[in-house]
Length: 142
Image (cartoon, rainbow, N blue to C red; front, top):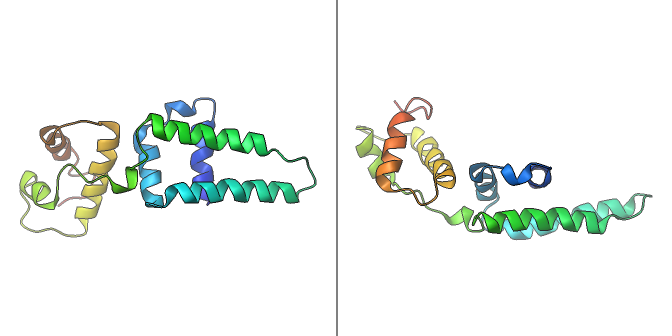
């Protein structure tokens, strides 16, 4: 839940609408397909925790923060982030990087590719291949 609250804090800060699609998309992706329920639970937990404190309840403030977050998610078309497939598959990556075999580095390559896709929505396979060639060392690909 801390990760959700941190992400909401990031996106609802004064410059929060400048949060990159990849940061927001990868966060939502890490929460999985039940991310909407998890966000709702996080909101409810904040409200309940605050109501147990002696101060006055700030339900509207929390609701506004979470509403701003959800608006940003839908504005950036990231509601399906957990189910987005990489534009290239393992065989494509093996072919592009001329690899003889795969290994643990393939997960890093696929995660990096998804992150790139979030920032370059609508890019082609050729553009993805070009990007991947430049990231070999950064992604730890032998």
